[in-house]
Image (cartoon, rainbow, N blue to C red):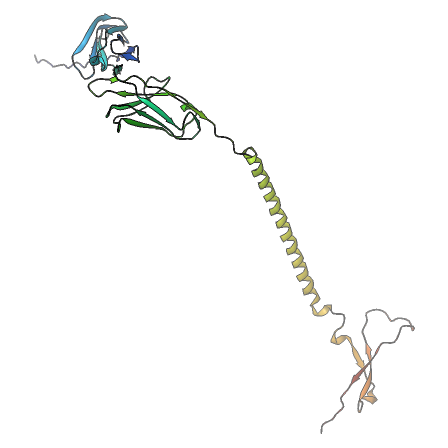
Length: 314
């Protein structure tokens, strides 16, 4: 009978979580409690230092939380920790928890100095510079804001014992109290005490005089501009209409049938007997009329004298 080889996949169980108590401001000589929180009962729970396969301590038969105490903290205890457990049902070994840093303060080091530029009351949008310094070269500086557990900025390598932090375009959310610390170079998460504090107050920019009426002025300018454009359009339209009317009137006056007197409108009457040898002839101008003949009292037509040439061929 042929035997079949079976491979069992590891049972995946949820990861635990690790917390520190107290979580900050731990000094050399203090006692710290590390709590490993479990999502299910465990056969055992182990506490590790980060990147170290050998566990520090183990707790057996734990229901939901295992506590590990570190008494009289020393420099070597200021490291990173993780925890792990083996579940009962389902049975399986969890992954290690997220790492937690145990930051320890060494009061044998002097606190750093701090300065703020510009000082205290600063308008919104301004870039603020915070400088930290000490008498030890080559340390890493950290900038802390009151109310936040973790530093907001840090510089790994200071130049000449000084570090410069910049808050760009500050807003009211940047208002608060700031302090500096520095990390001692070496193996552990050992820090100096927090230094003196500076207070930053971000205030709104002063309003520009007359700026509140800016929107009203813009609206008035738009309305006036539109009225001016309408008036100019009406003037141009009126002038165009007058020019067209004047041109049409001129064309009408220049038509041949519109003149009251034309060369065909006057007839000259000359007596047949006087057609030769006359130097001057009395011509009667008769203007044709469409009106009916008037009474006998109508004045006679005007008399026109004209010079008539009678020279014959020589």
